[in-house]
Image 1 (tube, each protein chain N blue to C red):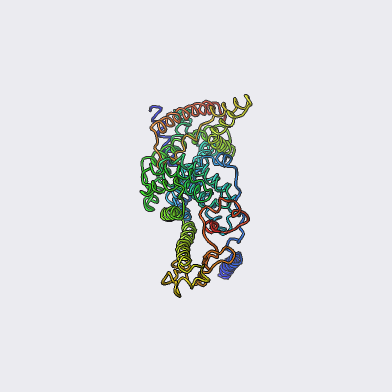
Image 2 (image 1 turned 90 degrees about the vertical axis):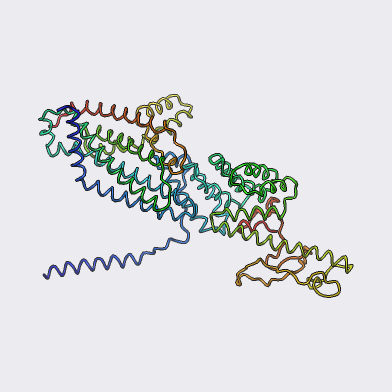
Length: 258
Length: 313
């Protein structure tokens, strides 16, 4: 059995395990309710109701998907350790790195599945309300998927060495900083302090730059989106996920489960 | 069985108590609802964590609420609306209508109008192909600031854009020829009513149009008064002289009130010669209309009327 097959098997099992998680369904339910609520919120404004409806829809998708990614992601490895099933798995010819990557793949598949369901709800609500849906929306939703993969990778990294509670705090912190890093870079560049500029530059370079995955405004206003605005973030996301998983595997290899 | 009944009874009693408490809590928002906290625009952008579009929508709805609740008191909402639209358009600069919303409602002082103009210029930056922002900018320069040249410049740019009304070049010419008068106001206001997306704004513009309609009739009476004076050799003693007696120059007097006025708003429908100014005046407005009065300064101060009414002497 090749490594990829082993990772795939663990991934599929992770999907099966994750879809039994009631938290996932609760968050998914509220996400769909929020997408539908966009119709009411949009109707409060006497103009641009379609835009507001889609703003609320895309924000709900991002908010609840991230919630699922963090709160389901941080508990996956801990659950295996807590139930002691990890010993059974690792006693087989599966390396710790394969196990960790398999867990990541499974959770990303789960998150993408729920993203697909939310996107379908978004499209249906938009079309029923007469709001246009085009390739820009597809690009925005696709990039949300890549952003979620990075968030899951970060959650996997923290869950490799700490408790679910701490891992969720850390992941949430990284998510927030990831959306702030561009603004912090600007603040540093506009400041007269060289050290502040260096610090903000390091934060910007090291932490994931998640703001590049936010094409909501462009999609909703139907602004032109260059191909590079999509494929460069995808490439960056792939690289970042690989780097995070490499670090996570390295830490996980050395973890003592006793 | 007995315990089961007690449980159900307790459950129903709890429900009844909860509903009773709920009914006792007022569901109407308090009349003087506090304004929401308004951060500085850049801070709001920073704190939005990528949810800038939906946060912008939130503040936009607050702006609508504020104007809807206090639209008779522009001096109360103008500073707040100015700041909130700044936040809305910083969070999502590609919004369309909020720029014009600012221009419509920021009319309580020259400073507010200029702030509205700044918002329109930001709107133009993000929507360079939308003639409406140039049109509103031209209107503000002409109507509130008496800057006809600047108004003509703004409208001239609008004429080059797709979808702009065909009469705009004529309006530009009028503004440049220093003949900017009632007709220019009528053209501006008619277009604003056609393009307005807000019923409140339409009401304000319609109010101004009604007043111009009465002013046009008053000017007709001025001309009739001059004719009477030439024929009779003296001024009229009352408006009845224009329609009665040897030197009558009119068959009837025109209505002194706006057309289609609801019965409850009638104020006598009568013309009179104002003893203070000596001018023919309607009982409805008790004053004569003058274009661009606001730009002369004193009319801006201490007033709390809808913007269109403030145009009047």
